[in-house]
Structure formats: structure tokens, C-alpha cells
Image (cartoon, rainbow, N blue to C red; front, side):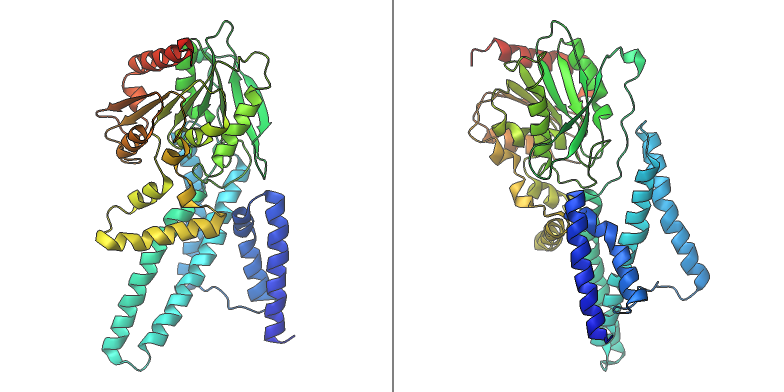
Length: 424
């Protein structure tokens, strides 16, 4: 076979396997990261249609040491984060993390470095010593200028999943283990807990934040039950024990909220006229974006929600001076679209709730460095329905409840109760 025919065969192989696996997993990006090392193996070593991704070091010892470190880092990260979160991590998730970090991402970065090395040599050819230095500095600045937003976007979309630990007996919470589908296509199988309560004041659909799981909001569940509400909480896609390994910050998670809503509407012990919503961080934004498709939702508490994902992307590069901020911002948005078809401009919480009349209680910590408190002000000022705002001094991201759980419970309980008695 000629080089051209081998490359054509490789392209056909990539297209066929990518389409098939993407349909199986329900995610184009997950299929890419799963198959990329196999494509490289086939293309570089079997078909010899593409160059081999070579390490930057000439010493074999240095290269093997680097490989060991690259493999050890995701393993250490998985178990350290599981310990920190008081969660558990399945060995399959550890293998997925090693495959993603130590195989897929590492190989892609090696090729990226090779491309920029080739570009440097081409630019410096015949330009003397000064030209060589200029080419080196220029290509390095361009490389790292693109590498930072690429890694931030990629690692934000693909996180390690940690299993939810069973509610500890000392909380005194009885619960049911659930599995139900999300709404939309592809449908994701979601894991959840339902905490029933006799003679309740209503049912709360509770949504956790990014990178966490349903166990992360158990203190909120306990608080809501103490206030007289039964609760449904679940793992978003790409979290806990639900399907998927890709996060889209509300772009698709709103379909998970709608799936949870559909499930609640099937239960005989749930009064459809007394269903409330509670969300934290990404969970709050996903809940608000799903609100137009949940007729009958009585009221919502949105703690630490963002007003738009575009604002959040810009916030990540707040330290980049002036107009230069646009370069990593645009590149990060492009990476999100290429990686997982994420349309950042369509994740707009403020626009989603415009025109609604559902009572919403916006809560935000004034010391929140993750999601700026200006997001709460944008959401509050732009909403024309019944609303309430609390900005807590000294509270970081999602920390308002932990600063004073008793006051937090009183305010949430009073807000929900007032909405039940409201004839609207």
C-alpha cells in the first residue's frame, strides 16, 4: 500500500469507529477520548500512515520516569479527591481517568508539541541567530497561550466521577434508591435517592453542583426534611453513579432536571401542586434553565447560580489584561464546541427565566471567587417574577448555608411556605 492509500484507510477507520462508538456511548467527545490512542496506535505503528508521537526528552530513563509520573498522577488524584469528598471511587473510574489523562490527553499534547517544534524550525530557517530566538519565543508564547484555555476547557468538561456514599444512619434519613431516565436524546440513566416524609408540606427537587454528587447536598436534604419537606436528589450525567463522563454546565443537564421532574409526576405520594426546586451552583443554573418546561413548579431556591456560561468562561481568564482576554475566551468556547458540541452562548440562565412568574429566591456569597456575586444581581435584576435576594457577607462558593444553617433553614422554609399559601 502507498502512503496515500494507508492514510485514506486510516481516515475511513477513524470515521467508522467514531460514529459507531459515539452512538453507543451517546457522546461524540467520550468516543473521541476513548478511541484516540487506538487510532494513533493503528496509524503510527500498524499502518505507518502518521508520525509517531515522540517524547520531548532524549534520555530513555527520563521518558520512562515521565510515563510513570503521568500514570501515577491521575490515580493519586482519584483517591485523594475521594478521601477529601468522603466519597468512593470505582476502579473502573480510575482506569478511565488513567486512560484519559495518561493516554489520550498525553498523546495529543505530544503531537501538539511536535507541531509547534516543526513550526519553530520552519520559521527560524535561514533567519540567523536573532531570527531563531524570535521564532522560539513566538512559538512558545503561542503554544502556551492556546494550551492554557485548551486544558481549562477540556478538564472542566471531563471530570472524574465519585460514587455517592450512602446517607449515614445518624442523619436518621429513610430513602429509596432510584434509577430514572433523563429527558431528551440521548437519554441518560440517572441515579437518585427519594427521601419520603409522611404528612409533608411538599416535595423538593434538589440539584447538586459541578464535580460533586447527590451525597454532597445531604445537609440540605436533612434541613429540608427537618422543615417538613420530602426530597428527591440525583446525580447529574457525568457525576456519581449516573451515565456519561461529560459535563456541559446546564446545556444538557437541564434535561436531567426535566427527567427528575417527570419521575416525580409519576409518584402517587407527590402532590403536583406542591413541588419546589432547590439548586446549588451548576445545579441551580440547570434547574432555572429547565424551569420553563416544568409547569406547576411552585417556587425555587437558587444558591450560587451563574447568569450565563459565557460570563463564567470570561471569569476564568479575568487575569488576562484588556482585549487579550478575548483570545483565550474565544478559543475555550471553540474547544467546548469541538469537544462536546457545547454551545456556550446558549447556556444563559438569565434569558431562560425571562418572562416566568415562578417565585425565585436567589442566594449568593459575597466572597464567592468561583461564581462572582454579580451573577446573582444580574439574575435578580433581570427577573420580573416574584423574587427575593440574599447576598451573604463572608460566604464563599456555596457556603451560605454552612455559615448559619439554622437561619438558612428558616429563610428557605418561610419562602416555600409563603409560596404555598399564595393563591398564584
